[in-house]
Image 1 (tube, one colour):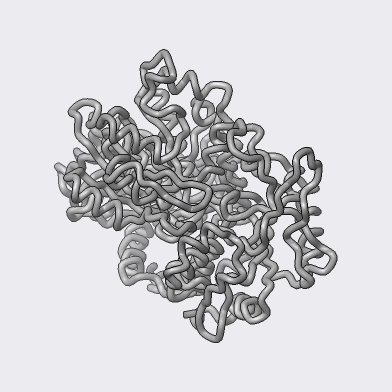
Image 2: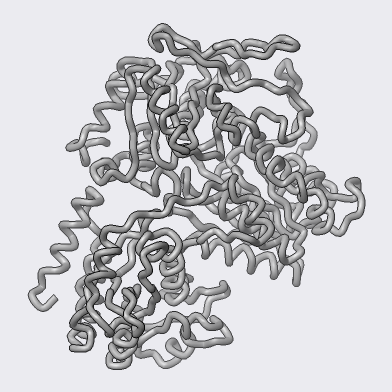
Length: 640
């Protein structure tokens, strides 16, 4: 910092990693905040420390401003996360663990640091298994406002946050250096620095594996930044609704793998512990079936207990894990019968409650929009959605639809957007690349590929892709093959013990496979094809569709890209003659634009189900060449 070179070095490093320049605000913060930190580090007691600047978190694309290393009094390697703030004043916020900065409610900096420390403790090998002790603090190097300082340290407002993760102000440089010396100044920082630099991320748990433990309070997901902010805002809104009868809609937007379902499940668990009248609703039958199957042993009794009912007929909705239609029906009968509706996969909402007959005829069961009936059912409705994940014609769940309904009903709206990536190896860059590929965003880069964050292969031999996935499965990775809906499903005869290999093509060579089996209506969750396909490794033999995979994640996913969505010269084209989903084709036949939009959504979902790798076999030659061209390193900023 004395030489004035560090901000420039950081800018170059940022561009090399991210493929774009850092914002002017971030560059200015490096100049100001790192200079202030450098003044503290002149202290001779800290001369054996080492420092990371802008340390990437194990997953999710977040960075710690600085991490200092050393040894604690007992001699073990130690590290301190330092959050740097240029704030000069703060005010009170109505939200828990937040303060107002320049008219914007933001997380209390000690809460922010606590999130980073907890996350590193759980997901970074240096702290999980190598014995590095970690804590954190905040350096508010421009803060002199006495009232703001008192607020930030107020135990009545923020509990023990400021004691556990202390804040140091402008005139407390000596005190800050003394505290750092107490944490780190008992030996060199080389060992801790090496373990951090060479460490590896601990894999994140899969949602379905942790459902029961989460609801029973035996496991808590590590919620980071906006996730934690959304969680606390929803809790606060429910408490206000229960106390005063107020209604709030919370709109949580996020792309694939940003933790929407994790957050939804954690809220359900919290509500259950607090004995709230809470339910989980979703538009995905596969997801609902799996959640029901995982909780069969206790969900029915828990649901009755939370609703204060002895008999099922007294319940506002039949199941703890239910559909949007069931919540809407309850809302139409009687308003605010629930404290909290956790509306997951809300992009799959329909315009009206309806009855759909096998011949495609639809009868509306209400003239009131379904979203209004859903909102009416609860004090708080938390909608979790992705504006680019609706895959059926008629699914209207979009953030604009939520905003319009809230305005019509005069309900308070709270809106947040999740931007941390937990799937796809934690690579937000890969998801951005998929969005660029399918035309949802104008550009992306290949930094995720050059850093080896996530594995993507374009396969030209279907049998080889299958062998690769089987090998990974034998190594205890969970693998599945999914495909665009470009092959018909053969009916299974009564008593048949085998499935017809419908997914076949001469371009597959000798390889073929059956679609996921159909178990029919009325099956119990544990016997349903959606549950068995997602949970039993023997079902790797069956190819999943968009309807069986949405909402789920696997270690490695093989994707068969059909010819219903193809690249032609300079644009995507929908070819419905290649699509075998009769209901889908019937619903979009009058709108070419809707067909194209929904098919792009379908492949976006299929391409983002893996946590470690995606392996793609593309039937159409021009489409395959286009995808391969966008995976060539060196095209970073020319992908628009």
